[in-house]
Image (cartoon, rainbow, N blue to C red):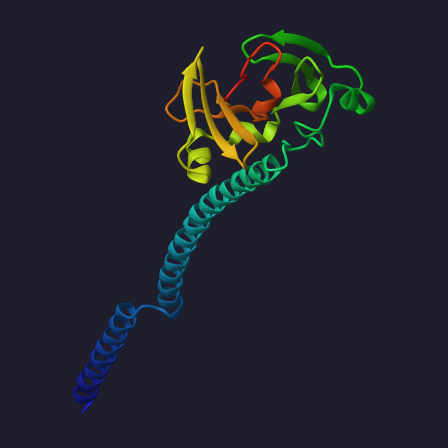
Length: 227
């Protein structure tokens, strides 16, 4: 009888150990709740990071496009202003029109020019006002026949910008390292754009509004400038 109980006790102990071992293996084969969550969070973090990187690239491209559009709009605005004022014989940032202004009118408001030079080929005397970025061409009667602008806004405008806005020029020459294109503005005035860079699409150096009739000298039979 004692032997029977001993065998029975051993059997119970063995079965208990077997069940315990099996239960332990089952638990070890399942990922813990924390481990599963960590894996899920890691995946979500990776996806979120990729989304952020993708989104961060898009604004950069949009920003560049926006900057380019802003620059183009600014250049078009300047060219539009040039065109409208030229019809009145004026340049940007200057209230003295060609034809109706005289050197005396200018000196009353701006004082004496920084320098004044006679330019035979241009048919007149040229008075430079450096602080104003403006040069006036006057004939022997002190009538203003040309006004040149060296405004800083012009430096961002290219040859292609001018042609895109105004179309094919009425006048197109290259001389002494300068490319000059011109357009008619109404029946009396003309616009001249001067580029000094020798590249394929040079930037604008300066431009002027010209009153050709002001360069004529009827006394000497000089027909004056056409451009």
